[in-house]
Image 1: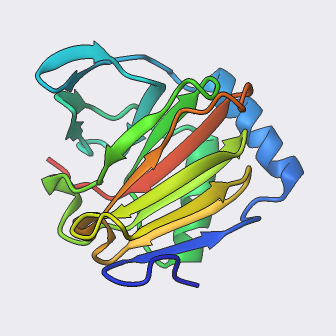
Image 2: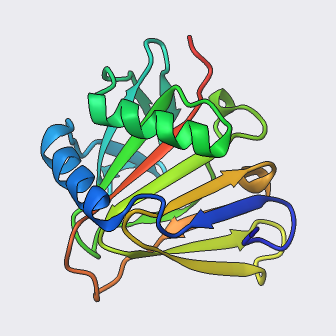
Length: 193
């Protein structure tokens, strides 16, 4: 089912990973990834990112956003296995993943689109959620009254493709009701340099 009425394609699979498998993956990734809190460029100022991040991928799969340039760390065995499983499910290939660690509800991701040039005109972004459930908001760029909201449960997979990044913004807002951490893995394919 497409969760946006026009100008994009957003699908959601609630239990892409079984609960036990999702919990194991969360534990391994939380301890095993090279988490960092980079300084991002926001309205012309450098500020700490509102979450922890790590960038993994194929050699040369560099990615730049918010004034940051990321060179990929080598794939871990678990990230490779998840990438391959998601690729088989979505029919798309991925050469990189941005891992985000939301430590609790005070960590967030503001309104944005994954529309950087190295992603191409109609990127496929496959987003795997682990840990705490969080709200995911979508807002049409031209008609801001057109909005959608999903709750991303642990083990769920959200796939955005087609014109979604051209026509929609998305966000993970702050919330006082979440006290547990969440990991989000956004698999993508970037132009290799």
